[in-house]
Image (cartoon, rainbow, N blue to C red; front, side, top):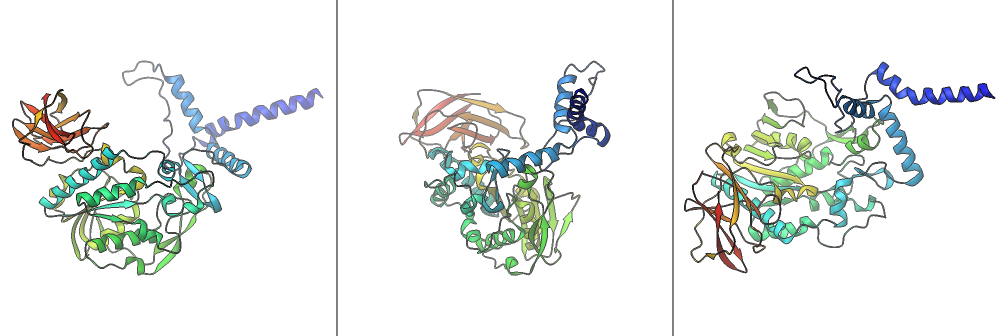
Length: 447
């Protein structure tokens, strides 16, 4: 009996030690999907002194890098899904019929984080200012929304998550864009009209066929006929990002409709992957020069558009930089953004020189001053960056800032309601103008 107890004790200890033995013999586990795992700790600092956080860093390293980590995570996720019909991670929603959804889209789906009326107006106004500067540079502007996957395919969402019956953030923003005259491409009706899914079951993004449909819709909005989605597609393979997040050891690919022919464009400069911060291309396409700001949905869309424009620059810079318009000589400007990130339009001001405006002639003195922060070192050479917040103003009020008596309109974007951001010349004096209860007020601003 004692021998049997000893045997099971040793077996248990060996099982517990197996991940550490694997770490020592096979090396550290590699990250899956977009994971960033702890780096190996150093015993000493750069100056040669002892690293006081060595044990803490070592514990984090072992916890995230032990052997068979991905296999054990996958096993746990499979058991959780089979027994409880639940996802083992909040990042992934376990849907019906093998469909997976990105957890960060739940707020949109359930309507639990509606944008305020001010945020909606500010998002649309910021896009209107971008469109205005693009027009001054001789470029056509289009805002392109990439829908959340569960916006298109709610029938595959788990029943415990109820879809909101209220208008979505995008539906409300779209109305505001119409009011402010901002040109946009709504891909929801285009993609929803397809009888077969145009998003992957195990990925948060559209398929190459879905991307081709988006390409054709963007060009149609520019008045250019396009039929990329009508070309032949062959079945390839794709490993979904959501599958990697939930089942990191499962490398079973999903079928992927891929353009059957070779691409007809050339990369300019170094190219490593579609995730590159900046990608430049040239082709014999019929259109001129494109500057596109994009997110991960552009990983496939960029290749489609690269064939249609003779020169193109695709940037993942956030906030977007409008000074690139002149640098690239672009005659078309596209801003693509996924639905779940619409709030960023009201929080991340574009890097652009503020447009001049006329000073409101009938502005009354505001009862309170506005704190105006000035950062002279900004991304735009010769211009300072001014930021501030107006505590109370009308929902649809722009914010003007007078710098040494010259009036500029700020982007109504920043951290918090009533925030604004402006890139303008360095000044000795400043005042902030805004509307409250329908009348203009002038607030002193201390620099």
